[in-house]
Image (cartoon, rainbow, N blue to C red; front, side):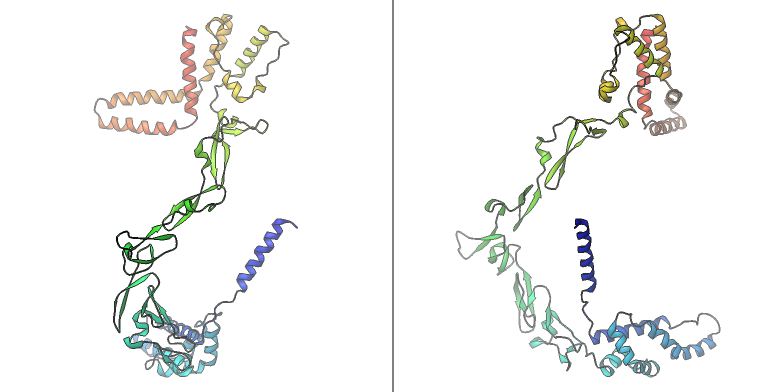
Length: 446
């Protein structure tokens, strides 16, 4: 079976499992609270509907009628419950008459939650009670629910447990004890105060590192040499005391109370990727050798070679006329039957063999030198000449600016900025080659 099909099937089953996972059902009291909230929100939203502007006396009469109208109530109840809220819709269906009675007779006399959820539907209790019989939440001798250090689970709900859910750092049935890694700083019959132990302590008498009773995992106990009762928790170096903690390609790093595994950077050793123009790239658990920028790997030799697509932009240009004359001269010197293999030697070799001839054999005749001079003139394009003109203009502006004129100074620096943007291209290299060629040819032309 295709592995990709297996992965797709597994992913589909996981999605179905997540979608079909049971969602915690709301209690009847929670559904009633949602209904109350939806009704009150709808009433507030429709309070002044269709009564903006116009005759004030007429509005007051009509507003009073609309405020208790069937039309308004129907509009509110249609949006009171979400479609997937089963308990909310169930109570609305069962108690719609009670809702209508409150809407018309009791809006200004009794809270909807107390009337509907506690008195009529009888699914909720008062805020400080819970359970079927609405038992009072635990308080103990303090008189505060859960000793003032927690909340009563399911308070106000007939399906609530009434257990104390303690705040962080407190524990016990009434939340009147200190929790894990906390110690007591103050306590009486009605109040308790707890604080966090030192980071190295599991249990403690105080907040200092010398007041530990037991140590947290990742630390070992060391007794004070002068007072054996004083315990200090010292970090365990798992990387030294244990072996094979990390997988291959990673190394162990000790941390406070624990350790972590980090990837080994093989590239940092400098003993990998030693091929010409190769660079090392670190990866998770390994490394890979890639060609440097502007180079690509030859599929035949496996070596990194200059990318012709990049380097061809910077190579010295040779006109077709000059190529023909050069090839003709080589044939005359070595014989008509001699073949050249310049094209087969590769881009890098071609670049390396572009060396100027020696002064002894530069010109075999006046016609040849004249032809070379014509070819050199072709190397300087119209665009290169434009750039030279711009350079001359900048020099003139700089000369004028040197006299102290603010206007000319501004124009000078503006021209420098614009020229820098223009010259930020490969045309700059072409101009440089043209200037070098023109300069080196001058003595010969003379």
